[in-house]
Image (cartoon, rainbow, N blue to C red; front, side, top):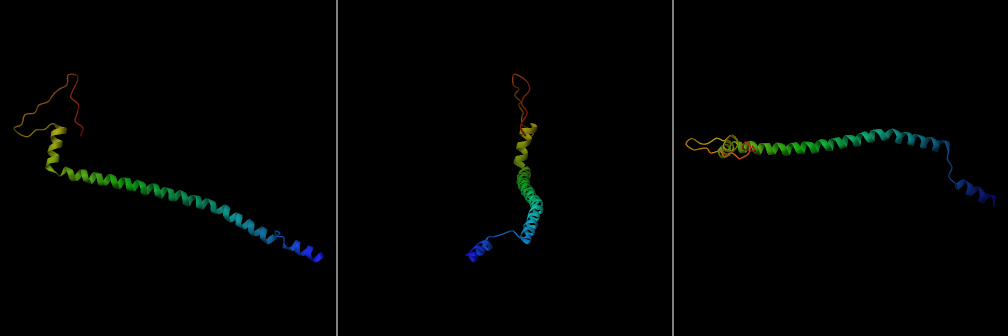
Length: 109
């Protein structure tokens, strides 16, 4: 019976000095790895934000290119001159209606 008792005690895991040192080293590695991982995640978030901003600016640039292309059209220039500046073609008569109260509202150009 004594053989069985010693066998049972030996199968029980125990913490040796090597295992304790290994656990301490692993804990230190995990502790020191937290900061770089956090910085990496912060940098990835910044990159994602900058990519979204770049996409927004690209869309705004595309809209501005479209507006510039419209300004090369003579009909659009005439429409803007009439609506925004109140200009008329030679020989036309310009009529301005004034509201009862105050000055006329400016054109939305």
